Image (cartoon, rainbow, N blue to C red; front, top):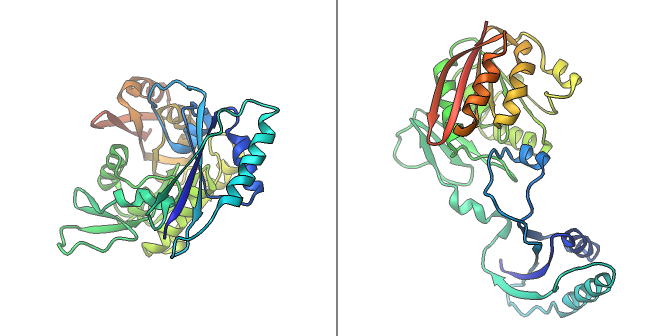
Length: 321
């Protein structure tokens, strides 16, 4: 499958207007490139702790993709002319930038899923994590394997923070464990927890796309759904979600999120934990280690058990007194 790619040079201020015009013309296969800083809400959704220090230069590039037929003899002149006409009309009212359109062809069968070429099977110790579209490797060097499709924007498990959490889960999941996965993303941590022997697990995320990916991954991995509860909501701010999650019922809570989210979370989550329950946190860049550590130390209900590191990333494990 081939696609004609048309890139419109515009401004960050006008990029939403451009995408709206395209959608009104029936074009939904769109990409946006800009240097706008992420909002705090976006950072939390994407589980981003640090970002490169990039200044918004005011420029944006909106690309649209039009599918080519097998013979490649398509003409999109009329579509492009309509786009140019609509953009020109709107530019009379606001600064739309140059609105220069450049054209190229992409050979990829599915441009939306280009990233999949870089997600290959890999090991965390003797646990094999592989994408759902890859075959199992011939060599059997694993004690278990997990199939993961991250969905639209969720972790594959390759990041250091996920490795840290998985290693802690291996250490503490034993016997009759009820596990809570806060900020579950693709569901990889709670699914591995169940595979390691937890008797049941609950996974929560603020993004419905994350919980959808989690449910799909649970099915692919043969998880007994009578042992697995997945729902979306904000446990930090929503009392109804806190009640739904349950109190004093979890043996292990794992939260691979952000330092700035873990700090308020460690206080909110303690009432949901049994006495002597374990809290595994990660997503903590080393420059924020002391801040998270201090917050947990100030919590009368928790005591730090150990701190582990992988590269620039930190995991802090605590228990409920």
